[in-house]
Image (cartoon, rainbow, N blue to C red; front, side):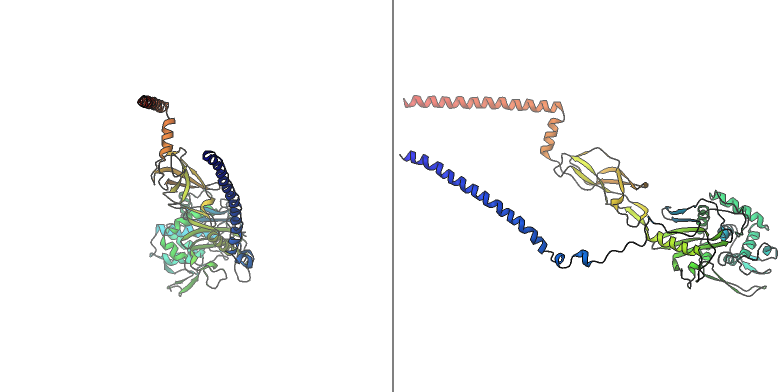
Length: 478
C-alpha cells in the first residue's frame, strides 16, 4: 500500500512543479515586457530639454560657408590662374594657357635678368637715349638724363611705380649698351624657364601685337624671380625714396598695387609678399602676386581685366585678385589628409579569437591641398593587399600600401600596418589543421579508430570482469 501511494504521489508532485515553472515563465515574460516599455520613457525623462526646448527650435541656423571649392569666384578678368605653391595644385584656371598682352607684368622678367646679371650696388647714369622709347602714356619713375642711381634704386623705379623709363635704363645697361640685345636675353631666358607661349618685344610691356605671354608662363618667370630676396624686398615696398642726384632732387615712389595701399578699400596688409601690376588699353589691367597667410602660400595672376575704376579708384584686377586670395585661403586647405595612425582599411584574419579582421593604420602621411571640409571619410582608399592573415598576428605587421584619392585626383600612397595583435583560437586552429590537408584528416581518422578499438577492448574487458564477479557471487550463495 505504501508503494502504491508513493507511485501516485510522484506524478502529482511532478505536475505541481511543472505548473510552477510554467507559471513563472508566463509571469516573467510580461514583467520583461513592462520593463522594456518603461525604459523608453526613462530615456525621454533623462533628456527633458528635448520636450521643453527642442534643439532644432532653439539652435540658430547654421550659416553656409562663405566660400566653397565647388564655387569659384566670378572674375572680370579674361584670364586667371591661382596655384597653391606647397603642393603645386592649380586651384583655379581661367584660360591660363591662352596668349594675352602682359603689359607691365613684363617687368618681372626685366627685374629677374637685372638681378641675375649685374650687382645691385652698381651705379648707372641715365642718358637721353634711354628715354627716347618712353611714350606719353607710360608710367614712369621720374628719371631724368644725368641721374646717377644704383641698380637697386633703378629696380625700385621699375617695380614700384612701374617705370618704363627705368626699364629702358636697365635694359641698356644689362644688355651691354643696347636694349634690343636685352630683349633677346628676355626671350632666351623665358625659353629656358619653359615658357612656350611668350614673346617679348620691349623691356616694359608697352603694347605690341607680337608682345605676349600667358598666365602660366608668367607664373614660371615670377617663381624664378621670387628665388631672389632682392626681388621680394623691392617689389613688396609700398613706397621708396630715390636719393637726390646731380640732376634731380630726392623723389618718393609709390606702388601701383592698390592691395598694399593702407588707404585702399582692398588693402590686404601683410598677405601680399610680392606683386607687379600692369595695364594697357589693348591688354586691359593685369596683376601677379604672391600671398602668404597662416603658413600657406598662393600665387595668383589675372590678365585682361577692364580698365575702368570705381568711385574709390579701384580697378577690377584688384577686386579679382582679392577674391582669388580669399577663396583660395578659405575654400581650400593644405595639410595632412592622411596622418600616421589613421585607420585606412582592414585586413582579413583567420583562426583568431579576436574577430575576423584587423584595422590597418597608416605608418606614413600625405600632405595635399583639398577643399576645406574634406575629411578622411571623403577619400577613396585602395589597399595593395588582398590575402588574409592567419592568427596569431602581432601589432605593427607591415601590410603594404594604400592608394589615396579624392574624386579623380590621386593624392599619393601611404604605408600601413596592423593596428593591434590578433590572438589564435585553438579550437579553430585544431579544426583547420584537421581539414586543411588530407594527410592530417587520415591521421586523425586513424587515431580516432585506434581510440575506438582501445575503448572497445576496455569495455569488453570490463564487461567480462563484471560477469565473472557476478558468476562467482552466485556460486558463493549456493
